[in-house]
Length: 86
Image (cartoon, rainbow, N blue to C red; front, side, top):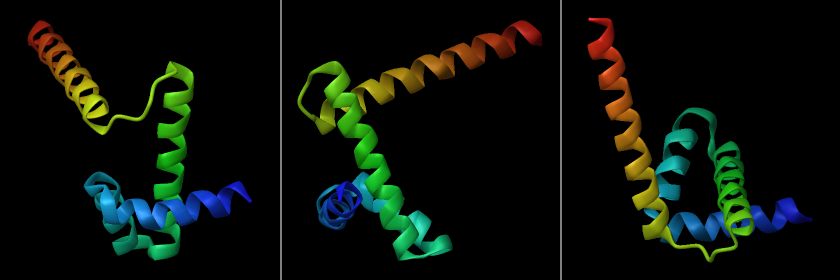
C-alpha cells in the first residue's frame, strides 16, 4: 500500500521538481520508466525520512544549500588530500 502511494506521488513529483525529473529521465533512458519511477519514489522516501529525523518540514532550497555546502567541503578535502600526496 505504501509503495503504491509513493509511486503515485512520484508521478506527480517529476512534473513539479526538476531534480526528481532529472533522476527519472536518466534512469528511464537506460532501464525503463517503471524502474525509474520506483527510483524516484525511493528518493522521495529518503527525503521524507530526513524530514522525520530532523523534525523539519521539507524545504527544497534548504536541502540544495546543504548539499552545495557538503559538496564544497568534500571538494576542499579532496584538494587538500591531493596536495599532501603530491
